[in-house]
Length: 323
Image (cartoon, rainbow, N blue to C red; front, side, top):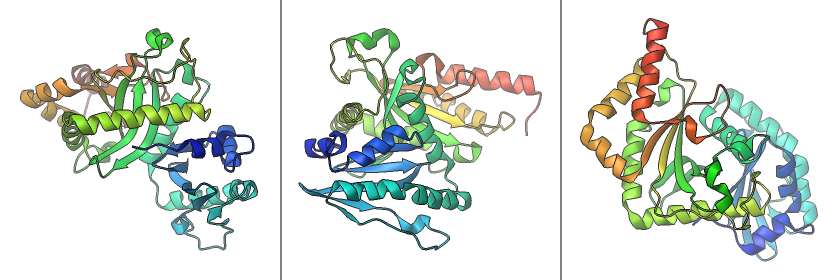
């Protein structure tokens, strides 16, 4: 399970904590995202890994910046790879502008838009001026677990505004982002994702482990001050309805409405009645449609397959042609 030790949490959030400068910078800088792993954290910038911090023992942490981002091969000051005191964590924070510039230049040559947009979705719904209005909160991006045999772009919960005061009734939401129509088909396309997700959810032990990871991550993020929403009156943390059916949500960024590819893929899926029925037993399939513009996630924005197909057909009729 992806979780941090109490020592790690305290070193991040306590005023005199060894890692407090790093957390403070993330709290103040909305271009950064802290993601919780198994006894380590990733600090993401534009979807790139700006810094990895790993707990080594009670008094030190390993720190790492991947110099693959330095495509210009210019000399860079990389702080010490071991953090043993407050000032060394501060040295990493002071290096962030230089490290960010390296990632900017790297992404100008080797752009990875899906990762950048995943981080944007997390920021909008977890820690922004509209996050308290959201009904979905993200625990992770770029999730990969070899033990579970699972990969997800985003892990989240759905917490309806009408039920939030009770603290419970939260459902798992597994999200996949596709940027542009070129990412819709093939090995990592929509149909393959649905097959893999069904296999995971059908395995009760693996799915229970995933549920516990999501719940633990969100409660840790909350404790670190990285979630911005009204708490329930009981003051309890996130509590998943472990028996509730999860949602599987596709977020399709910058789809070309003149293209036939998406309609063709969805028709293939809809025509397989047996497969649709099998999936419906395990999860609710949804497609995100934004409220005018932006990535604030609301239950009302999540369309069923049939509703989404009707929307695409309406776009086709309005456009008057295909490409």
